[in-house]
Image 1 (spheres, rainbow, N blue to C red):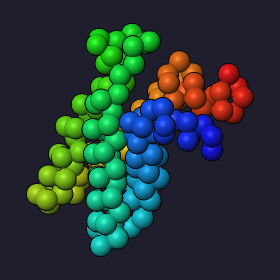
Image 2 (image 1 turned 120 degrees about the vertical axis):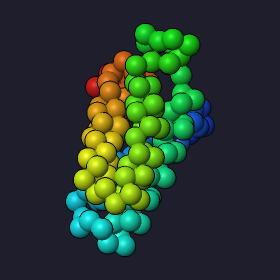
Image 3 (image 1 turned 30 degrees about the vertical axis):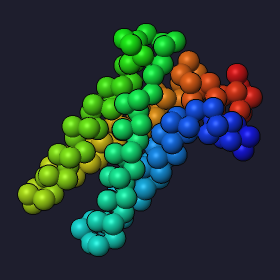
Image 4 (image 1 turned 180 degrees about the vertical axis):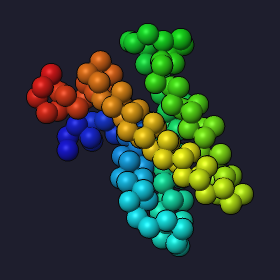
Length: 139
């Protein structure tokens, strides 16, 4: 718990990003595994959309000058642009009644922005990756 408290005090934006990203990862799994189209799917889905939006906005302001970057923007920031573009599209698709496009877009966002970006985030050379691997004693 000390590592999280330290992270909160030293890097509140990164802490916020981590909390919303983990929340999106968990709620996204619930949304994908539950029955689709009912009121619960919509409520959990909107919670996921809000968490993804918060995670994306936070990520736009996080900089890393240690890795290959341009003004602190690293290749992982591709996911920021990806989510900022596709999250509204996924909502627009379902509002238009295009369930198939909505499903593909939201599933792609979950896999790409939650799982793939999460794996990249936890690589040993990245800030959160270093924090995690040091906390479990592997670094």
